[in-house]
Amino acid sequence: MDTVIAIRSGSTVLTFLIFLGIVWWAYGRGRKDRFEATGRSVLLDDDDKPDEQRTGGRA
Image 1: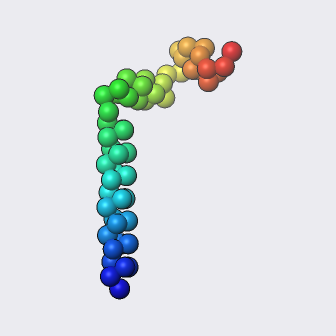
Image 2 (image 1 turned 60 degrees about the vertical axis):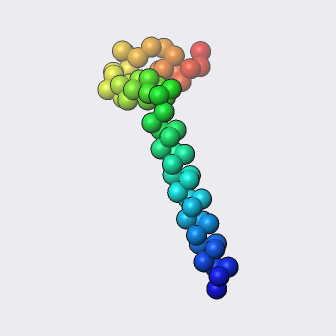
């Protein structure tokens, strides 16, 4: 029974650490510009997008 409790506790701590890592990644300063550009690109018409965005970076 103690083994099951230890496994459950360990998995809870591991899941929480993964969650914190995802939050840190999502709200990191280095990604803000990229996320804002991606959010704005949804609102642009296809004619307003640069060729690189329209083709997915392929020529």
